[in-house]
Image 1: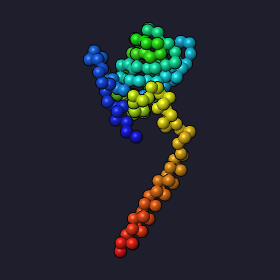
Image 2: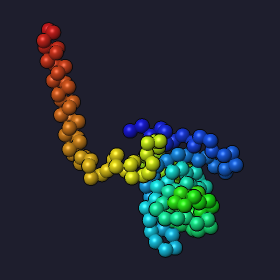
Image 3: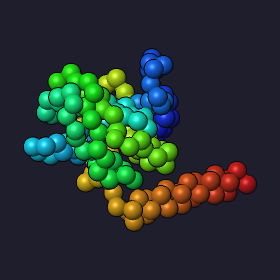
Image 4: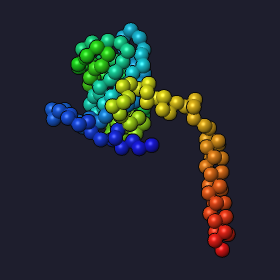
Length: 156
């Protein structure tokens, strides 16, 4: 899968930001003072993120997001447009954590409005087990070689 689009900095990102921002599409679980919720991280930098959630975010509210390689990470909502908000992390993310998040995210696309669309593309319940995939790969390779050998014998 080509993930290079998710590794590019967000176009049009303001120069007043403290760190480069990257477009991602990453499902996550978050919590606020009242409940836990599913979230979709839309963009991320070492100092903050843009996140879409099914609840209304309030400026000044502190939420926690479970990030790959970092675990629960505390962030303060600095702007909100209802269910989409911008947050500053209490502690900047390490480069290794930011890299892990970027590599684990789904490619961004104008046709994907939410994380559910991206998750559906690689739903773990629909994937074949590793041993099944290995058997299919070996079978395909053997079939290809048998075609090459047959063609060689016919030409000879």
